[in-house]
Length: 155
Image (cartoon, rainbow, N blue to C red; front, side, top):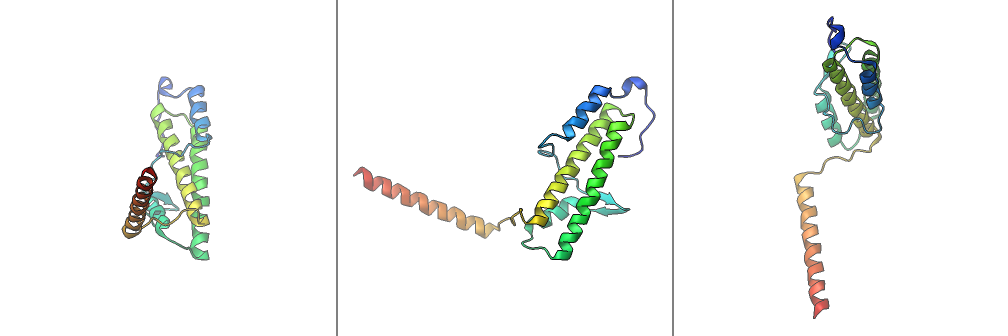
């Protein structure tokens, strides 16, 4: 979040609104529906986070060094998310700024979960077009087989 501006006290969020945003960040599936950040700045370097997660989803195996770097990035993103949460908790914010911080934090949570899943092998590589066509053809053959069996049992 960029530097906060001075605001009229009437424009700032109330304590109840602030608590609503903070409790929302601690809901179980807060990240569902959040868009991954296209990029994030880490130590002055911009990382194309969306592209990184996309390539992770397509990779079958990771070397130990790649796993280590993914976990380091997860730690960095986790610190960034916690920092945003502290700002949301303590800074004088307008509703617009609070919503922006909330969505930024939720999208970072999504990125963290996706990166952890990639590193642990929970994410399966996305199938190629040929693999999908093979599955569709297999399903069609099964349906044809089941229809033929159904016709035979009616006779």
